[in-house]
Image 1 (cartoon, helix red, strand yellow):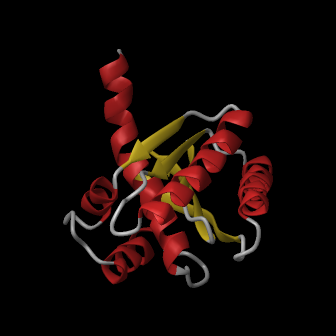
Image 2 (spheres, helix red, strand yellow):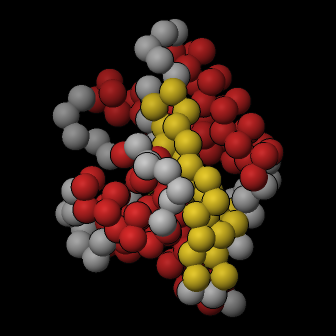
Length: 161
């Protein structure tokens, strides 16, 4: 199964794609969609179009996206929610079901600790997937989301039966 993982952001979004066969995980691709800081409507279009292009090129079978994490700034959280919506819409446009995961679930699945930091996540992604080139933090986070989905999707299939 080919899984698309997405770490949403309104300025930069991490993308990770893995193949899963049984317990074996294989790195396929990682990238960043950078929107810059221009007009927000244009940034949403860049996210939709950029993810659509990646989906068309790599043809994932399913997708997973990290939920919005709200810390301090309500305005930033709203923009992040809109960016996430554009990314979910791109997945839906291509017929992909999208599974949401909280940041804590992703960290727990990849590192084994729900409060792991970005360095720990990046280290585990490198250990599990051996990407051919260094991953920017957001791309490593997206690969972690895909790994999380790989661990959870067999249980979701059983629950549906």
